[in-house]
Image (cartoon, rainbow, N blue to C red):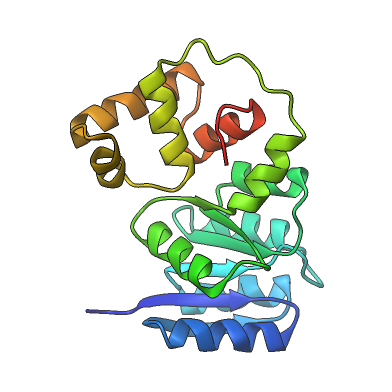
Length: 208
């Protein structure tokens, strides 16, 4: 079975080396690294990794702009942010841009590996501690438009669970999960799961 290819970008070489070591020991193929945003954009065009794991605080070209340029070239590129920045604006800007995950640098090795596993399987992942911080700054809005079951499904989607995982936890069929997901997208006017999760966080619809 082919290994998932990952490109790492961080301003600190020591951090890049640490991530390289962790992922290499756990079945990932590291196809390159970069220390600046400009170098990242240049190198990934040749490396064409399945996943880009990057910080948003980068010299020469900040991570947000670098990710924006990469997604303009490769719209389906999987980008995962790993950063010490836990402020809401950067988080929501990245999610709106289309990154598939946001992990804080104080995460454990197990959380990093779990996040990458879920993202590789087509799901999304957000640092739970970051979600909690954002929720605490929000006034919880009414969510009467959502049924109890829809709220349960929404919670699990934001936890990064796949349709099959949600099906098992709630003891409902995958088809029913898909129907609830479609209803949630429609009711929140969200075009995808990332925007659905953003809506849930911004309106205090989930618990962490």
